[in-house]
Length: 130
Image (cartoon, rainbow, N blue to C red; front, side, top):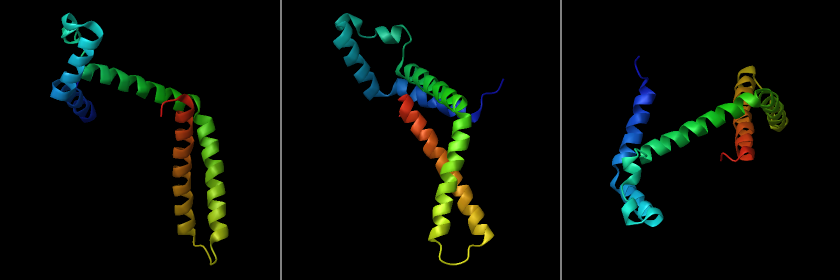
């Protein structure tokens, strides 16, 4: 089974973290602080590398993000449309001249995208993910 391009790039990112000298120094200091001199290298021996830890955190965040989107898809759908309609209504009122159909459609699509992002951001803040 062939890995996707994004998986390959992601794996390279995590491997680079494992080889970064600054991260290695930080891990050594944390081990020394928490476990003492004898604990230095323990995380590496247990294959608990910085890249692996970060990948686990990223995967958990992605799963939580997907759960929030799934649990709130109806709310996101309707709330985004309500906000978008309000933004478009305000824009129409601000226009002094005649509005052509192309501008209106473009403005509605842009407003919907922005409203969806706004609603998702609020949900993520409420869940403590951002």
